[in-house]
Length: 336
Image (cartoon, rainbow, N blue to C red; front, top):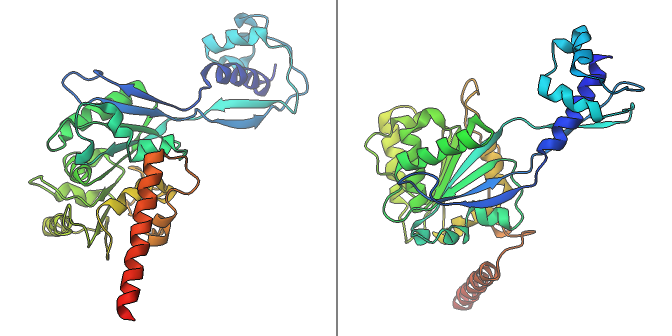
């Protein structure tokens, strides 16, 4: 029996046993004295490979399979047994192979979602985007902060839990957050820079004493100049602290003129946010920050397009849109 033939049969048997659909699960009490969190598990997508043999006879036994010199060097005992039930494969056979380990994205929410009702974390952000139809080929954890500042060590506990319980690519771990979650993102990355491939902090700030670790991680900080909840000065303090600590070749910092606090929440719903994060890896040599992906005000206008959002989110979006149009009409009227 040719090695390609046996490999084909084994891949079929193996893939059928692991295929699963994407799902979101509430994780309560998984970590002692830790945060509760939501876990998103992506589809275990597959790669299609063509079989390269005309006809295949089933393996009579593990002994027969091992009698093939090439096979004995490459086949796993437990999987070889599975080929007993397979009778035939052809040149046109499509073989499903499981994907390798996947990235991990950590989403940190703002103060409005703090508490003990985990369902609130689904109100906005990465999990809400996924629930609405945003497809991400990565694991996602979204912890709930019961109150106060995000604690980097507790976020790290969830990261470690995910690594120990899911097939995570530890060279591709990402963090993003907004407002209080923006602070949490900065504090976490500054504390564990060696574990983060890239991060995005929206309209936040920082509360750590040492910001030097941030300079070794691709980091995109965005803040609106019209933010009344968290002033843009908070992000400026972080940037200044980073510059004081050393060179900042991996920093991408944007101040968006006229953009308020709530508008940046749309960042979690657009594909560009995740595309930017996933372009980075700890294995990049040298480490670089991507500056090719561009996000504009028009991008944010279309953030919810094609997604199935909750009725409350749609109403909120329509109210804000109507308010902006009304404001524009008033300004136009004053000019006349």
